[in-house]
Image (cartoon, rainbow, N blue to C red; front, side, top):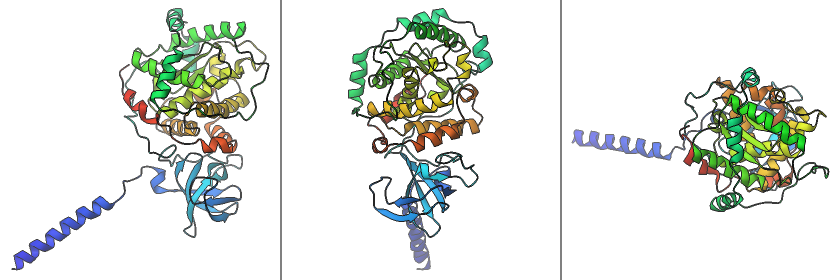
Length: 396
């Protein structure tokens, strides 16, 4: 009889442990699980949901200490010292160690689970060894490749393919406005100096990093790019999109309408929303004629200097709008910035990208501070977000 009781007792323990294990929620990685110390940079309202119209939980005063967890759109879930929990806008938060100018997302670790309302995951973030890193020195010393440029220019955009691809992804276009309207003086077509300088810069870039030879992958990037470009004002620009075979993390928008990103950056992206965000901000840079903004003819050397801090921040915001117009998550660019920051901390090379722009904390803070209600309302993962999984881990 004693053995029977012991057997029953062991059975209860085993079944109880199994039930307990099934009841536990999935673990959340990184800062989203641990939480991190934050300070409220300005008076704000703690909301029950990540929406401006959600029920108010509490009124918070600037200087209030909080613990931050995951991000959704332009909001972050936090807990207060008295156990109050809810959501606060990113632009209201800062790290206790951040300098006064670094508000919003500045100096914060990622602490996110997803962009929008679904958790997005993808294949491995590791990349196989391909071409050497794309550095400023290597770019300037590369031999221009007219052959690669000619091959790229022969590939004509297929607008209908983009339309069909958008429909297959159930993307819904939106009417979103820029923070500052596009100047009426910006022509629909490329200026001769834009075209000439862009061809020279493109040949130099393609001499340093050749296009990925995977045709399906190139077509995927082009389709997403053309979906986004359909919402741009400069519709007569011959937009072309290319994925470059380099492990470095970088993206480019050249004055002739060529938009590119490296395989190193592509492999970091979690969703099609992220890819659209990268392409959208580069389209925005071309659309604003930022390469002509300094009053000088764009040159190959400009590939390593960039277009200036103000222009970069303007393109970041315009990129949110262009991606959102196409039906993608307007907050996805924040996800990309977070992923780049994390990759750099782990030793990945993004030196060329970082040398051409203001520090990521500045860009993150600027984006968070300029979010309009309509952009906030469009910060949802698109129906096509997970389509990128089909192409993750593809061969070169």
